[in-house]
Image (cartoon, rainbow, N blue to C red; front, side, top):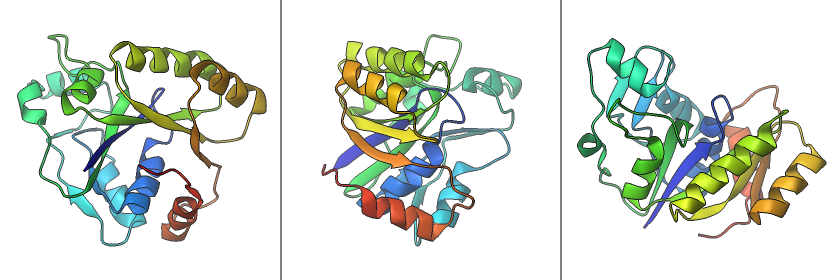
Length: 201
């Protein structure tokens, strides 16, 4: 069985689209343990993958904010014990919330602590923008310092040779996939990207 966390270098990086691609590629279960805001990433996955195997969220919070703040607004405390791995078969794709260092409660629990607890491997999503080299390398260092296995990187958005080359130079991570801006995202687009993946577990 493979447990893979799709995490990004920040918010609005493209984790959900990447998650849909890897759910399709691996025929995997999908789990978004913590959802903040009114939008539902699980519903997005359901619209992009045929017959998806979606595991319900453990926390669904209304405020589009950091999980610790969103939970506090509803007088909820996000607990590590409530975020143990669900039952699944073969492969599981877990979509993160925000970046790896996002706080989940006011007692010091970070999302990266869950990745470590789950003994999961990471697929890191980076989006090309001014500052993304710094954000990507900081995320990489945080994961490596905790001895978390990083399978590779997904670049999302407009290509930037210098940015991508610099990130690869310092991290030595293989590029698993490049996702480009699309006018529309649908099941066929997700299938097309899944067909492009050469990576083997």
